[in-house]
Image 1 (cartoon, rainbow, N blue to C red):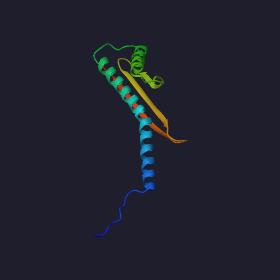
Image 2: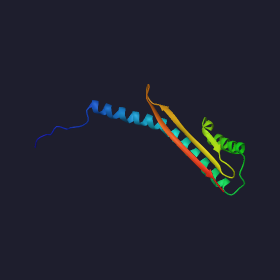
Image 3: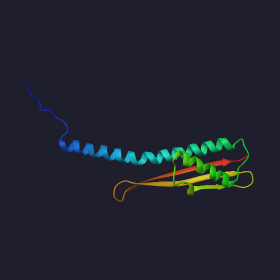
Amino acid sequence: MTLKKQYGASAITMLVILVLAFSGFVTLLKVVPVYTDDMAVETIFTNIQEELSDKDRPSRSALFDKIQKRMDINGVSNLMEYVEVGGKGSTIIIEMNYERRVPLVANLELVATFNHYIDLSE
């Protein structure tokens, strides 16, 4: 019987694996809040579309107030400036296009772009 040399990860390999795992974890911690905010915005837009499909059409300021209140309740901040309400006659269009930048390391950023659109036509 001969003894075989055991092969395993060296200290440098383990260090590289730990650095990669840590950087992935930090990136995940920074990106998840951006997407949870966007999911809340998507839910707000879906609920408003369902709510207004059967009722009278509110004014532009009333729509802004509804969206603002729901964003406050869901803890979504600094996004109201991207909401645009338009349309003619009985058509109401609510649109929200925005991007979020998350700083990673030094001068590196992650950029996520989101677009939401509702067409409330009769």
